[in-house]
Length: 58
Image (tube, rainbow, N blue to C red; front, top):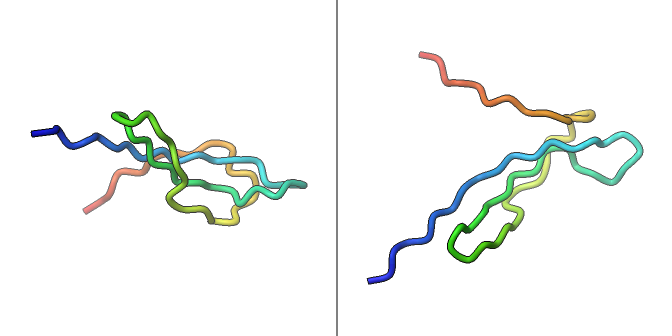
């Protein structure tokens, strides 16, 4: 039986001022196939050049 391929999510922040960039991109990396593809694009935030993961509260 073939083992399921592990997929990791990557969140990438980009500069947006004066560019066509959308800001924050969500990517999926397929470790087995060594492929990267865009899952979601959006959040028209101004220049989200770095991102921080927040822990859920409660």
